Image 1 (cartoon, one colour):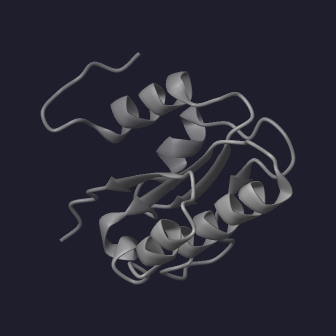
Image 2 (spheres, rainbow, N blue to C red):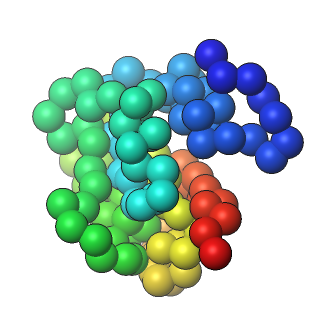
Length: 117
């Protein structure tokens, strides 16, 4: 297990996430700088458990996670939905937070500070 530092490293963040998330959780990743590290720790455990883009495009992650959480709510399923979004990508669709609030969605959002220059 990676050691805790200040600031925390992506390795520490994602190894901790892998330990605390539910086994059948749905993960949405939009953190271009850290997706490779995220995939080392947070594994797709079943079909429909890990979503990311096939090509680069910014702003899909937060609305996609909201849609997945809404689908869980509407179908009566109870899978945990976790969104890992880079700080830059987060800014492209911040209005999804309003949707999450209005629909009382159960969703964990982690915003990674990528420190890109």
